[in-house]
Image (cartoon, rainbow, N blue to C red):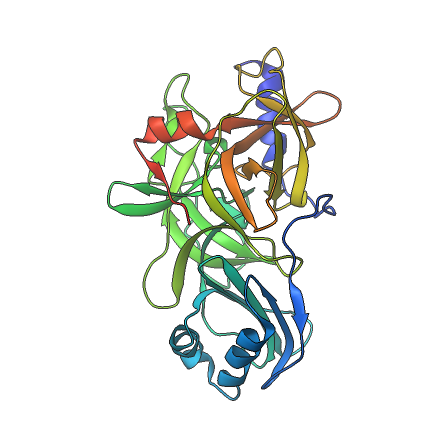
Length: 327
């Protein structure tokens, strides 16, 4: 591997701050408050439907939030404390509709795999709620896939790193919340980067069970509803694509350009990426209905403008003998 490419890979897996987004896509509709909700936002459904959910949740204990959501026909996506008062943000989906509520009290234990979330990779065991161990790498979660009978989530292979014997170095993975370890997802299942001339991609287990979800969406936080992954698309020259990364923010968009010498022949873009964006989902420009198609996963930046280059989704799936999960 050329030294300049190796340096770019390492840079893309560093910890940096979040930058603003620069694209427009599906947006939330703000609805009148209902029940004990402080904010009621919805996309792909009516405000009456959103307020019905908020009213049904009024006074419900954290342990019962998931049951109430499902009884209303919604599947929980995740919940997270706001961090600045006794309140939490709750996200749910129903088909291709999305719901965002902010409620007072302690956050229920609801979380799961979505693309565009911050990941932590570590050689040491990871414990939810604990401080991130030194020597860990911060990256971004990629698309949801099916590997055999199990679900898994993609990210960049170099996030886990390799030993001198080409075994995976940082095997333990978890979602990250602020400065702490969030939901621990487990050890790396497959790492294509281990192979000589292999693709820079790996698979982490997708969580399952009560309170856990694995949903084929691109998470866009509280700023906008999630994007629904409807299929895949080829990395055609000139195609408009976007990235959502833990460092660069949501819907960073540009166009696919030629491969630069020394990048191994993978497509590059006019999108500028930053440290921590490794593994980020690269997808087609969002449609008005909030759907996108998977194009690849971000793996390196190259050149003076930090052009983001990515592994195309097709070769990654073939290398893993996996299929993309869509909605």
